[in-house]
Length: 557
Image (cartoon, rainbow, N blue to C red; front, side, top):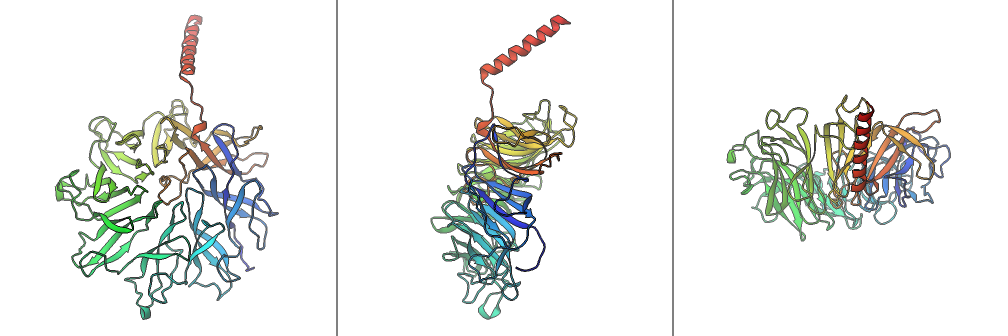
């Protein structure tokens, strides 16, 4: 064991969730025992994810204890998937897992991890101390390691630092893809101009180079080369999409950026800087900034682009756009400076933020409105729109009443996400001083129920029962860590999800301290299917009762 002092980082997979009273299920509390390890306790939870069946995956730090611990397995269904200071599978004896840099969880709850390695020199050194892992075939397996052979590169080519920017994507068939560099080595032809590439595979045995910087672009003019890429997205078919950059014959700063999309084993250009956008905006051309690209299993792309100014009358006041579609058939989803759906005439989009898509081609996005027209003020100039019903429709807008908080008004909303059922989730903050809202009890999470009704999930200041059994253990939330803020995706785009197709959402709650010595954090799953919705008859009776009481009160005055 090598001398050091630090927290241990662990990832758990809950495989058999228990039934809960009401919409909340407690996954784990900070004071819960860490099974099998004496004198060890949880320190912090963050982040947490959820699979398609409602099982939570969470990242935690633990403190206490010493020495090299074994892998944990909880008989009730909780299993340890990754733990620092344990032997690193697929590496020489003495090499240990170290700090997690990035993690992605697919819809089956399987993980892909980028991490550091530790061990005695020269067994582990700066030239080989990072790696990519997955557990899609059971236990944790090595996929790629810094300093190991980079498949598809020249003979002798080695992966460079995988911890610096590599961000893997992982589908539910166990197929992974990631962007990485090879170590420069002029003797084998690897230089700064051709060291970068995208690799795809299920494990180290089938990992293959997909595309490499400096390579000739197939079907393009001779001398037209790949000149860089963004991290890819992967769908359930294992198909990739990414933004690429070009150089060489016929390429200038006005046409070097493109969107590549794979279908049937081959790549094609779905959108190209400088090319016409089509009938949606006659004369307009795509600009060089393609952002937030995602492609689902249907091959449907969604992305943001700032159009080229000048062409088609486009200016800096209306150049931001969102697009949806497949290669050769893109449609305009929203445009800066145009009428925002479901708002008064004259209310125009002022900016457009990250769009997210599910497997049914339904999209959600956050956007702003221009103040001074259409009744838009700084009190109501933000909103979230969804295409779950077809064309974009307003889900929520600042200034709207906040469900679950009588008299409460949304002061800010953000972090739009959408699950495969078309339900939208977002974070919001409330106007202080309205509806009895006071600081710091003004932030929370809201989501749509299966019928589309907007519902409060949890709000700072709420009391929740953390005892899933017959007992009652109410605790006050002092903070909510909703990891999906502005990062929620559907279930088949290779990235982690926080709101699954069953309408279940995972979050981390922080609590007030107590004389009983309770821990101050926990991981919870909220189920939209278990939220009580008053029947119409009940609503009528409630209204009638209120009317009766009002009349009775008047008679007594």
